[in-house]
Amino acid sequence: METNAYNQKLNRYVLADQIVYTGFSSFKDAEECANKKGGTLVEVGFKDGNDNPQITHEAGLIEKRLHYYVYAGDEYKFIHSSDPGFRKYADELQKIKAKIRQDAPDERYLANFEIENAEDPIIVIKNDHFESVTSRERSKYLKHAEVYELGVSLPKS
Image 1 (cartoon, rainbow, N blue to C red):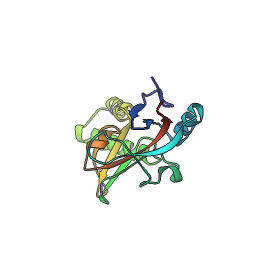
Image 2: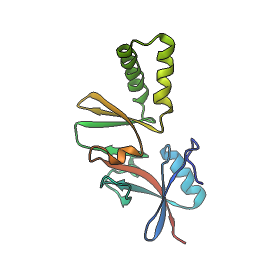
Image 3: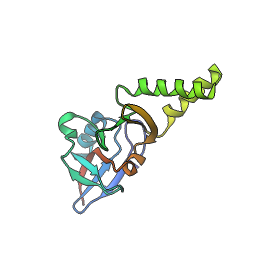
């Protein structure tokens, strides 16, 4: 089983002439895998509301040195757990949640554990307001989103 830098399972897709791995935790993680396996970095798009990968260059992940990007219209913003602003949003969400529930201070600390340990969490913002927290995998099926991931391509043997 192949894993990323955080020991999470990589997704493996068998295409017509290649095998592509996605699910990397960073650009560097994918780059190291490509170097180790003798593979090539590719951009993989999931654009049909399913888990059907297509090799693409639409999001420019390689040029921008990004490992993940979602486009679901101008009103949506998807903030991945590796994005610099994620911590700020996660902390604010936990404060709001605790206030609504009127949690005790120790419960607020435990509530923060939920976002931190969700499987590869993504915060979804719509028109600058919090909408939901989802996972990287589930983002492929939401909001008619176009999800782009950095992948490593190996020739099919």
